[in-house]
Length: 144
Image 1 (cartoon, helix red, strand yellow):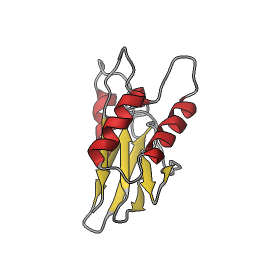
Image 2 (image 1 turned 180 degrees about the vertical axis):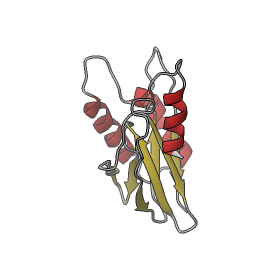
Image 3 (image 1 turned 90 degrees about the vertical axis):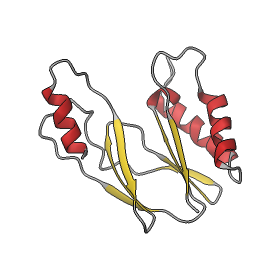
């Protein structure tokens, strides 16, 4: 699907490049995902938060026609919280994006034990810029 989406963007002369994560959680709690130049999802497990491995990351959508995107699979456990977010959540002018991701990771760790809505509220309060120049999206999935 990711490769197909890239081809659609590449074929549209009016389209610009974009980043993205496309994933699916199967019935056995495996998160299979592809990445087009986007920051990695975060996984909160047992009070620790970490970025998922992005060694399979591909180029931005619309950048390289014909690129076959790879996928990675992460087994999820009951109680895990998977956090996907747009890059505007962690990008700040004059600051390395890695600093923003680390800040998001630290706040996510502070949410261990909270419900999903409380976690979302805390993250949005900490990371929603006062003046949004771009879209902001945050998706949290807790495995039961």
